[in-house]
Image (cartoon, rainbow, N blue to C red; front, side, top):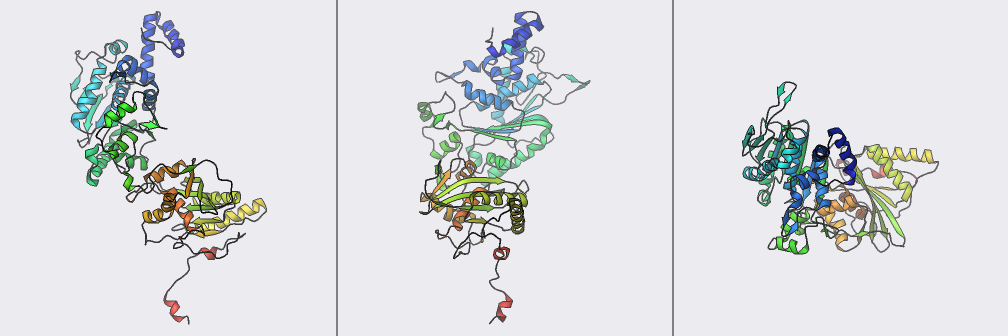
Length: 518
């Protein structure tokens, strides 16, 4: 007799009425629970709820309940977890549930080596399928192994296939592959990727690229409408998981480091156990494999935590807006980023707001005009670059705003010039980076995307940095700072009620015609 929660009581009575007796009704309830509740299947039916390690129960209903529920969602998902949190165990339970829901699934499981995926994943799944209680609840699907199963070899599993509209579905129920193995010509309805990388496969760029190419080759294997899940632990700041996240290959990305807010996310862990397990490990390995932060501190421009604040100090401030427009709206392009900052008379910089997205020029212009009307900035700095036409779109939007609101809008646009004499890293490091290190920058706690980009920004970084770029532009506009190599100093600033488009046009500094000027 299994435990019946209050929430399941009504369902139980429904099944009893349907079956005619309580025992059969209970079996129907258990069958329904197995199909709809992954945590129940793993903890109650497959026995994981009784498992212990170092004398303590392995399962944490809250954490592993979250993991089971996340795996069960109908979406392509990348789930990054710290080591020692049973991610492989739950992926195997998920594979079992897939077969219970649809015996005609073709599930492919991929992992770091062929031997590992055979001896860990497929062996575990086969053991689960031999659970007597599971055989009793699903006699039509989980047939006895000695019946025998149609395919029962080290890298494949097929208990039996059901006919679908008079035809037999081709392919095994489960096939397993190690990274690098040939998968061309195979077809799957579900792909499960588990720990495709480890410390040894991220030692060189060539090794990481080899894994990426193999993963790319696995993409066409999935049937249209199929589901793809990936679960793993990062080992390098530019590894496969980073590329997948930056390229938005999956619908959702979930991350659960060892601790959140200073507390272990899984109650099995304690400080004593953590110290025991990580004894002798390098700090970088602990940081990446347990805290999901694979960036070496020495490579970081902004080592976390970033300097945050909640309430602006009670003193006079001058506000600035910086905008870094994206060159295109294509998926591969950066996003347009806008940063709003308040600067005190003492040179303290408070970054108040962040905005970013793939916007068309007119939408970017409307946002800038709306912000300017709201906060009355001293300057709006824009790196026009390839977006020269944005000047005229802003001018048009400003006129529209003034016509609707029946008043002029004082605003001064300062074009931010970026040269090729410096790398992006140096430009950011000498502006935003320098002031952060001096303790002069404070970021509002709501600017989480900016801080996430700062955490990752480094010399070799090629991911999203639009907000970091925009934040660095603030220091090129503020008169009391000395970073004037990018823009032309404005001797006497005043709020203007008009645009000087010609002021924003690049001035000719030389050319053949200058020879004729006396």
